[in-house]
Structure formats: structure tokens, C-alpha cells
Length: 115
Image 1 (tube, rainbow, N blue to C red):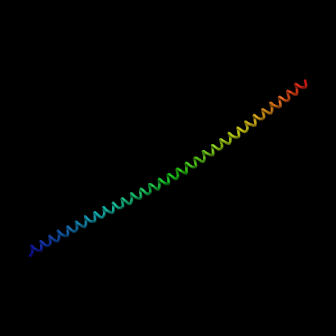
Image 2 (tube, one colour; image 1 turned 45 degrees about the vertical axis):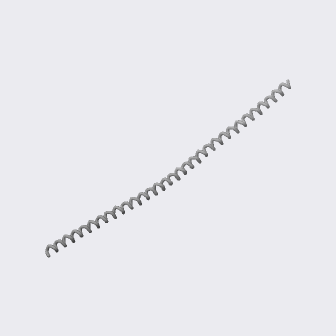
Image 3 (cartoon, rainbow, N blue to C red; image 1 turned 135 degrees about the vertical axis):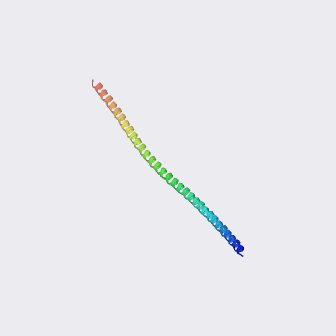
């Protein structure tokens, strides 16, 4: 009877150890699955943040490019205005010279006629 009790106790201890080992293995697998799930969630979040930041950077760069284009266009407009002003002044200068030359010819003609 004593041997049977010891045998039952050993079997019970063995079953208890197997159950404990199975529970620990199951807990370890659950922990690994949770870690993997969190890794995937973190990877998706990182991709989302990356795409969001890329979108923000792209939008910012587009805005900066637009601002730079506006600045360059404004500078070109100033240059064209100055060139147009210079061309107008040049045309006025040529007209004045032609008028002065014409007046000089008339005056010379008048002087020659008086002699």
C-alpha cells in the first residue's frame, strides 16, 4: 500500500510538473504572440508616421517651392519693369534728338536763307 501511495504521488507530481510545463510553454507562446502583435502594430504605426511625415515634408517643400517661385517671379517682374522703363526713356531720348536735329536743320535753313 505504501508503494502504491508513493507511486501515485510520483505520478501526481509528474502530471503536476507536466501541467506546469505545459502552462509555462503556453504562457511563453502567448507572450511571444503578444510581442509579435505589438511589433506589427509598432511597424504599422511607424509606416503611418513615416508616410505622414513624408506628406508633411512634401507639402512643406511644395509650399517653399511655390514661395520661391513667387519671389523669383516678382524679381523678374521688377527687372522687366525696369527694362520697359529704360526702353521708354530710350525712345523718348531718340525722339528728342530727332526733334532737336529737325529744329537744328530748320534753324540752319533759316539762317542760310537770311544770308
